Every structure is written in C-alpha cells, then in structure tokens.
Image (cartoon, rainbow, N blue to C red):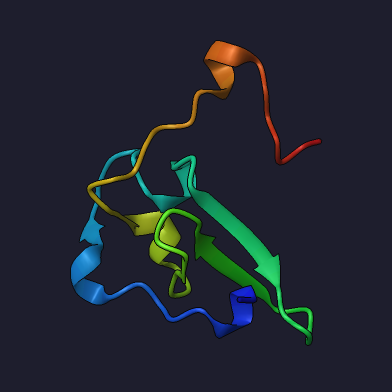
Length: 78
C-alpha cells in the first residue's frame, strides 16, 4: 500500500508534548511525497499519516528517541 492511501493518525492516539520528545524526534518518523510533490509526514510504526504541524507538538506512547548521537548515524543526511 502506498503512503498516499494511508489514513491519518487519530486525535486520541497523539498527546500534546512540551518537551523534545515529539513525533519528529521519534525513530519511526518519516516523510515522503505524493504525486503532486507535497510532503507527507508519516509514522512508520503505525503506518499512518501525521496531520500537518502535529509532528512538532505531539507524541504517542510508543515513540522512541533517536540514537544518532550514540551510534553516529544520521539517515536524513545520507
């Protein structure tokens, strides 16, 4: 199934966060683009799309902190 066919993460699945632990800092956060070159934010763990802006202010219970500093890998740059 393509990313475009995914549903959005439900409002009840995400909680507001006032710390650095948000969707964007989770190792399951990803992004892709649709046929019109619009960026789609995704949660690879839930296999769903994230509403615009929620990746900066919300998180879920299963979110894991990225470990680039420990292992020296930054896949976004590669």
